[in-house]
Length: 173
Image 1 (cartoon, rainbow, N blue to C red):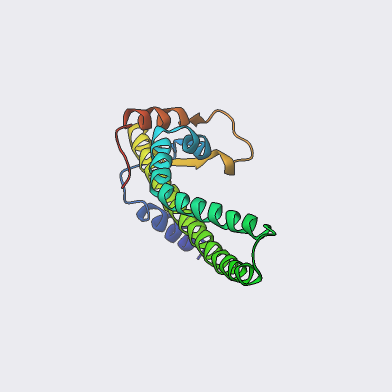
Image 2 (tube, helix red, strand yellow):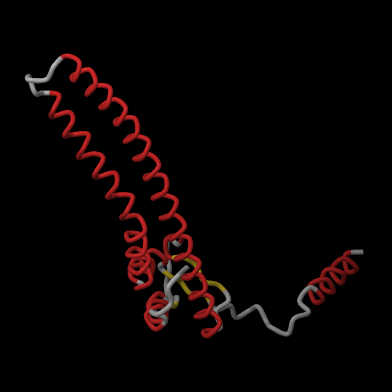
């Protein structure tokens, strides 16, 4: 009976690896995704594109803030009549509400666009990692931030950075 279970286990092991590839010689590499994210030229292009898109909204908020501060300064003028002072206070309260809403909307929009840009860059980095892994015939690639100790393992970070620099003309949509 013991031999039967051993034989069944052996048959199961043999047939569970029908692929011709042998899994005893696994090639492992590490990569520093944070370093790649900071260094690649595509990140700089994406940052400039975001700044360009959000600049118009920022200028509108900046103008509104200047007008708001100007009206507050006017409120300090002692030559204003009681009626104009009351009207100015109402305008200031109204503009403050609008300004706060615009700032919240701008902040939310800015955060969403930055998250989308970060996701696009990370997807691009993932594609670069896959390309380098296929060229180098690596079976496993691990982010260096998740490794406590490593010895004699290939670091492909610079290979990925070089590939990103070669593909510098790629800009995300």
